[in-house]
Length: 279
Ligand code: AMP
Ligand code: ZN
Ligand code: FE
Ligand code: FE
Image (cartoon, rainbow, N blue to C red; front, side, top):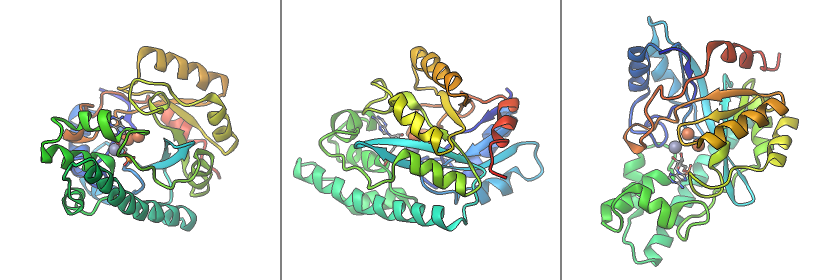
């Protein structure tokens, strides 16, 4: 298998594997490169780097930045960022704090729906990582109120769901601006998956155009949860806007069915992407 899986999560956010595990899998698959893109943090990168030492695997330091547009989540992948760049690291730190407050409010909503999920248990499951809805969904499954985390999202936790509370996040164009200012390259993650559920409407092209103004370099048109129509539509959008097309698995270990390496970006595209970095 060749190419770069540019989108993977670890225990540094809501994945269940360590960054070292992700590296090992990528090496076993023979991938050329691997992106570590935890939600709102780049803290998993050092562990990945030690594991990749002495292998041919090229690592891409990244993050999946949580933004929001009109009450809907929009995720922006940032590659090769300087995680110490203050304007970015301040915003990421604020977002992580915000995730804790929001988790508390989501738990209250579940409790009001007579689902006895406990905030302490959610914190325990997150184990120091920025708290995400998948942690909460898992805690809800443990109460017996739903059989799977999928069911928790469908009934309660998707954007617009009765138990969801949005993060106070910046807009997608501001997210791009911060990632670019931090020396990185910004790519719109899974554009077909916004609007509440995996299979509903994607993001409006007008929003993508604002992101382009802010320096967007690419669109993740290839994503395991995209339909064939999403893939071809967003490939067309990318072509029209002169953007790169990237692919990644959005691997979350056992927290999601997506397998590492199931979508990869060719090396030549990665090289072009690197060329988008502000000098
Ligand atoms: P958060 O960052 O807390 O908003 O949670 C985002 C994560 O929740 C994403 O990485 C997805 O894996 C998961 N997620 C969001 N919406 C859904 C959905 N409708 N169905 C299943 N998983 C979802
Ligand atoms: Zn996630
Ligand atoms: Fe995402
Ligand atoms: Fe992701």
